[in-house]
Length: 226
Image 1 (tube, rainbow, N blue to C red):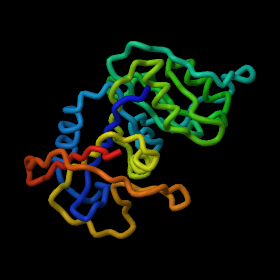
Image 2 (cartoon, rainbow, N blue to C red; image 1 turned 90 degrees about the vertical axis):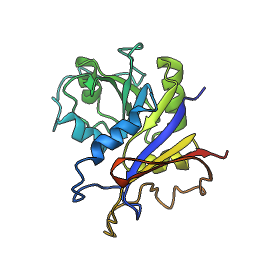
Image 3 (cartoon, helix red, strand yellow; image 1 turned 120 degrees about the vertical axis):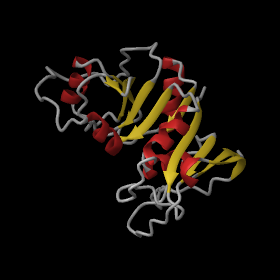
Image 4 (cartoon, one colour; image 1 turned 60 degrees about the vertical axis):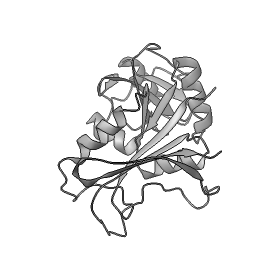
């Protein structure tokens, strides 16, 4: 049991994925509009992106009165949409259990502090465990499908989250929105990145569609050949 998984990225012509300094007022709306067309009932981002969304800096300590069992915790099993946060160490300080009108599900390792689990419970955030010290994404997406009925997931995180999903062989479709600029900053990451010691093999794809968008963008969609 696995959801249909789409990775949706936005990049410059040279494949850079960080948008700071681009000064393209239309870019965010164009990305969100194309993402919404997938009608996914779950969207996934990594810790860095989710910290920006949460606007939180820290969570209260001392809430746990003892060891909190490392068991998946589901608050809302019938949400219209889920915001899934890949947060192995438990660092995102949510202020509520909702992000962009979606119920939050934290994806954690068993190494998280007890106080963090107690805090998530106190504000009604759901969470699942992906492993003892590292996240097994295959296990996570199967849990989301089985326990929450998630049928389609869209990965909207940074290059490392997107690269990790592709590298794990879990992605059914790759969607890249290319904007009309060359970034050229060598220190900026590409759209998909994975550490060399984790890299498995190239991901071979089949072109599904090419669409010219507003403001001279190009929207490329590929499906997996596996």
